[in-house]
Amino acid sequence: QVQLVESGGGLVQAGGSLRLSCAASGRTSDMYRMGWFRLVPGKEREFVAAIRWSGFVTNYADAVKGRFTISRHNAKNTVYLQMNSLKPEDTAVYYCAAAMKYRTWRDGSVPDTYDYWGQGTQVTVSS
Image (cartoon, rainbow, N blue to C red; front, side, top):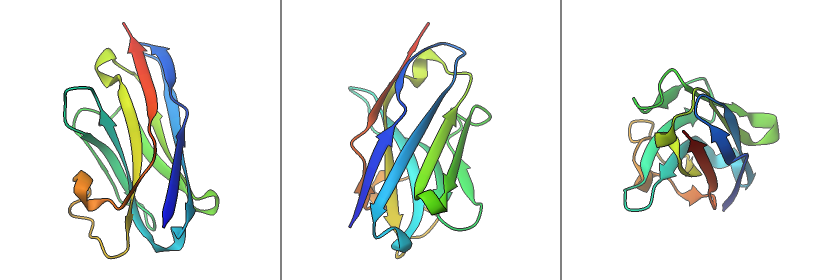
C-alpha cells in the first residue's frame, strides 16, 4: 500500500503562484509514476501532469503547459506541482495519485491507471 498526503493548496489571486506537495509513504519503492489531477464539481476528473518515479519523463495537459511544472524529490518521497500564472479556471480540488510498477507510461493521463490517491487539496484562484 501507498499513502499520499497533499498540501499547499489555498486562495491566490489570478496571476499568482502556488506549489503543491504530495508526500508518499509505504511501498514507495514499487511506484512507477505519479500524477496530479483536478476535480471541479459537476465535471470529470481532469489530468494535469505526470512524472516517472525514476528518470525525467513528464507529461502535461495542454491547459497547463508552460505554466505548471511537476517535479519530484525521491529521497523525500515527495512530488511537487509548481503552478504559475494561475487563472480562475484552475480553481479545483487537486489530487495526487501513484501508479505502481506493473503500469505503463502510455496511459498516464487516465485516472483509472493509478492505484492510490490522496485526499485532495483545494486551490482557489480569484479574478
